[in-house]
Length: 222
Ligand SMILES: NC(=O)c1ccc[n+]([C@@H]2O[C@H](COP(=O)([O-])OP(=O)(O)OC[C@H]3O[C@@H](n4cnc5c(N)ncnc54)[C@H](OP(=O)(O)O)[C@@H]3O)[C@@H](O)[C@H]2O)c1
Image 1 (cartoon, rainbow, N blue to C red):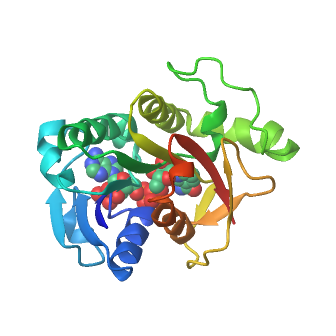
Image 2 (cartoon, rainbow, N blue to C red):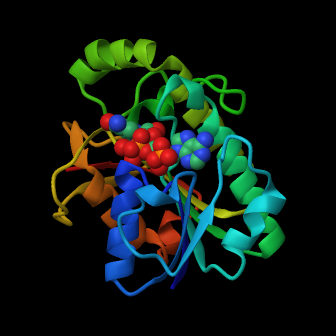
């Protein structure tokens, strides 16, 4: 397939790039620091997604069968980049006639209020008592801005007419790819506290041509 990978220099992004190239896909890698790319893409596009507009991104998605994005704020200075950058990406996709996009969100987002979902469920049905009453409140306080950004990104996709999938992993690790993980539509995975970046990328590449994953959030865990 012809794929465009945004944030191809991040933990998941590098895995997406390596695994997609190894699988023989024709890959356009988009990065703000292309020197940090770890595998040889067919094409490299430089873009800072905090400021890029749709017109600037259109050449990167033109002719793609699908777009994969592992974009997320690395530092406080990047706050808001997931929603802003993904909006520009989807506008560029619409202009180029590309419909399929898979992005990385996070496990707690199903219960984070946002302008599009001001009253989400109080608890995710996949979360056990420890996550609901101990881990979730702490992590949500620590990563408030980051999660608000991801929730707005999901809002934007939900309101779009694209074939989107938002993958919601729990804590990420750098363990190798296994291809063995559990997934669930619209909810987290019971006792699923970790997954490797490599396995998230593995799932995203698998889901590319799976219509059952369109317009879905997907809980995933090892
Ligand atoms: N850490 C966890 O345990 C965890 C758990 C659940 C979900 N998540 C979500 O998963 C996402 C991906 O995880 P990860 O480990 O792959 O993250 P990461 O290594 O921090 O990668 C973030 C990527 O976003 C890019 N980026 C950030 N701001 C940008 C900008 N203004 N313009 C262009 N690119 C920009 C980074 O580019 P540079 O390489 O140039 O910085 C990098 O490629 C996270 O951002 C988070 O939202 C994380």
